[in-house]
Every structure is written in C-alpha cells, then in structure tokens.
Image (cartoon, rainbow, N blue to C red):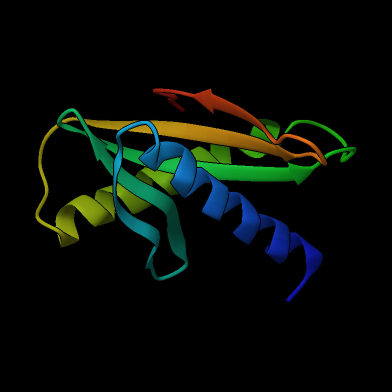
Amino acid sequence: MTTHQITGQIGETLARKYFESRGYEILHTNWRYGHLELDIIAMKSGMLHFIEVKTLKNGSAGKPEDSVNRKKMISLLKAAELFMISENKTGLIQFDVLAIVLKENENEFFLLEDVYV
C-alpha cells in the first residue's frame, strides 16, 4: 500500500468519527459502482449526504479541498445518481467535502457543506 493510500485510509477513518460525533448516521463508506466511488454516504435530519474526504499530511503543498475540481464533482454527481437509482432512494440530497490536514498534535478539519459544480 502506498503512503498516499495509507493517508487516505487514515483520513476516512477520522472522517467517519467526525460525522458520527456530529449526529450523522453513516450508511456506507467507499460505495462503488464500476470506477465511481463515494467516500461516505450519511444521513442527518432527513438529508442524504454524499461526502468526499480529502486528506493531506502537514507540510504538503496546497489544501486538501483544492483537489475537488469540476471533473471530480461531475464524477461525484454520477456516482450519487447511480446510488439513488440502485438503492431506490428519493428525497433531499447534499454534497459535502471534508478536508483534513494530519498534524502531529491535533488534526485540522474543514467542512465545506452543500457544494455544487
């Protein structure tokens, strides 16, 4: 497993705890359909959240959230649509991005809620 993959796994574990501690019900993690993937699918207050998790180590160039570009958002939209169809879901949905910076003493979390293409 590469360092990048290990960092991603750490971030997704932290993200799950982050959302659970804020009252989200985690429905799926790493939901896949072909080459498309949704990092976290969660429910809170009747809203279905499709959450992209981006993690970087402290000192890495840039911000984790900067890697969620138009191409990535289109991919997330397609994956969410396929999830809704395959699970026969309806209702309110929202796309969120959780950016995590791993630090020695305390990790930083930055939640971007209700993002659009």
